[in-house]
Length: 213
Image (tube, rainbow, N blue to C red; front, side):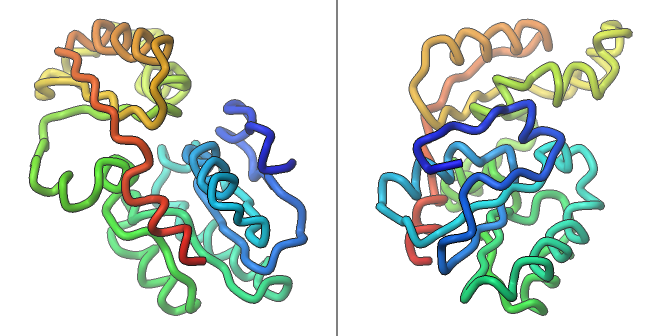
């Protein structure tokens, strides 16, 4: 797949996906949930020397598996590249991913998770929105697959308040300005019975993490 083609969300959710051919000198091993954003940044900055392969986005539901899968990917690809960068933040691994990347000698994105680096880690920390539920562009498009169905709300909607009763709002952090996604996010907030807040973040700290490769 070239940098001009957009990945399919369903494929990125469940499978490891190569989004560019093995022609670059640098490899980014990314989360499937931010594949579109990574491709856009690479294209905008003319980074044709960088290849991208993505691990399944669904790993975010099983963060205990992320570190092992990243380590496996690094070890599988490192002989073919002069440098490898891991396009994950901590993502619920409790520091294990950072420790593994340091041991492997590869970099990764600073921050606790994508909600933070899309907002900008400094700005996100200052807001201290511990009772906010966040959605990104990918999660708006895949709300049912990543939120509604995994929590069993498609079968037991009465569980909604048990899961979300302590949240005070749903914040949609938009990477692109798309009225259709805004409306989908607003409907998601209604389904969760949460006040809706739209916040255009763009790509936050992600470009700075990638453009130095």
